[in-house]
Length: 321
Ligand SMILES: NC(=O)c1ccc[n+]([C@@H]2O[C@H](COP(=O)([O-])OP(=O)(O)OC[C@H]3O[C@@H](n4cnc5c(N)ncnc54)[C@H](OP(=O)(O)O)[C@@H]3O)[C@@H](O)[C@H]2O)c1
Ligand SMILES: *[C@@H]1O[C@H](CO)[C@@H](O)[C@H](O)[C@H]1NC(C)=O
Ligand SMILES: *[C@@H]1O[C@H](CO)[C@@H](O)[C@H](O)[C@H]1NC(C)=O
Ligand SMILES: *[C@@H]1O[C@H](CO)[C@@H](O)[C@H](O)[C@H]1NC(C)=O
Ligand SMILES: *[C@@H]1O[C@H](CO)[C@@H](O)[C@H](O)[C@H]1NC(C)=O
Image (tube, rainbow, N blue to C red):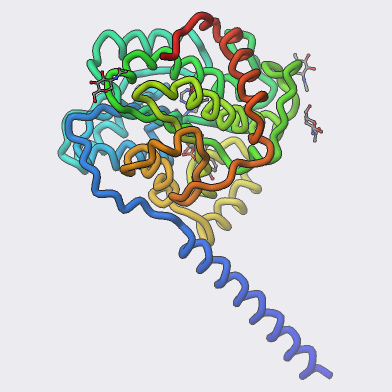
């Protein structure tokens, strides 16, 4: 009897261990890596949220390729630290950091004004900064903080930089998340706090819809746009969770999922891989184009969201040609 129980336990443990090893193996093997050799000397890139996480890794990669990289961050101390690390690691001294706080349209406008006044080109814009679990807070612009940080401010930033980007073939990359599959846009509540999980996934769905409509509007220009899910990655994105839950999640991610370097690969791919232009407006995962999520497969919804966003961000009358 005891022998049977022991045998059963040993068997169950082995099956569990085997499944976990398979999971780890599956994730390692399916992690898409960007193998592009593209050189970015002479090109300029902006990465929002570049001081940590996959934004930092993306900026580091562009710096290694010789680009002029503009780290768009909200915290001067953190920005400077990232700036110093990137220069030390790449010996590329053509790196700058500029401050922008995505909870304020005013800050976004000032940042864009600075870029437009001082840069003569912009080849890559990675709308990467994002946050979750920010609570029921309203920004100075009267918008739910998660929606403004993750979506509306990037919408405004992108529109304000379009003219500069049109000068040369250029790309806009929007970092979304797979949770967008569950998103649903409620236009009556677009700028107000609904609930924590809904806020994050809705903001991420908006980014995909934005990309679809953006690609559409920019069809006859030099600019193409892509959205993506970077994977499940060990970064600071979980910083606002309760310590116990965060510990468990980070332990699981550390064991099974992606490092920040791996997590940055799909956005690097979308920004630089040769020949992607014909896929403008599409969604990517693990350095591959994937089918649009059902929640985002609605051009009329993308168009309506665009019009609402123009109104909310007060950018009416922009010419997209
Ligand atoms: N990690 C994942 O598993 C995962 C999965 C799916 C999608 N994503 C997406 O990947 C993107 C990058 O996230 P990450 O995982 O690298 O997270 P992270 O390590 O927390 O980095 C987020 C970055 O966004 C910046 N940021 C946040 N609020 C800002 C604001 N108001 N103004 C300016 N910058 C702000 C942060 O700056 P501070 O350091 O100053 O706060 C930080 O640089 C996000 O869009 C996220 O939604 C991540
Ligand atoms: C697109 O970029 C090229 C440079 O590669 C430039 O000569 C051309 O004027 C740009 N086209 C438009 C419509 O701005
Ligand atoms: C969020 O806060 C506002 C203002 O304090 C309050 O009126 C609203 O009911 C809150 N919303 C939720 C969903 O808790
Ligand atoms: C969160 O809000 C959305 C949209 O208002 C709603 O559909 C969903 O049921 C809510 N979820 C919870 C857990 O309250
Ligand atoms: C996403 O990309 C589109 C281009 O497809 C751009 O117009 C838009 O501003 C971006 N939005 C966000 C929230 O990243």
